[in-house]
Image (cartoon, rainbow, N blue to C red; front, side, top):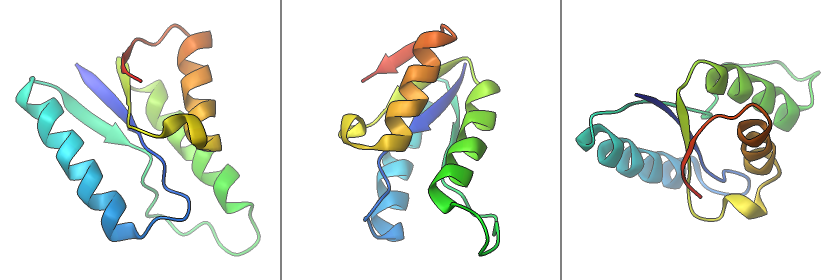
Length: 97
């Protein structure tokens, strides 16, 4: 199953995000899943609302997945909350929240 990983990123060092993401990816891979995530690496330029642009990118990735995993603290993240609501509205299974 292809699983989208949603985790809070705002205000966190990139290295901390990457470490948590790697831990979650490894755990899901051990269960036989492949993963996708919302970590944005593409430069959108200076003229965009960066958080909203990243959310759009994340939703596109979520659309190609069979389920979603929500990391601890997702409830306090605007982006994660939107991704969670998208799962609810579009009936995408949630593995953990």
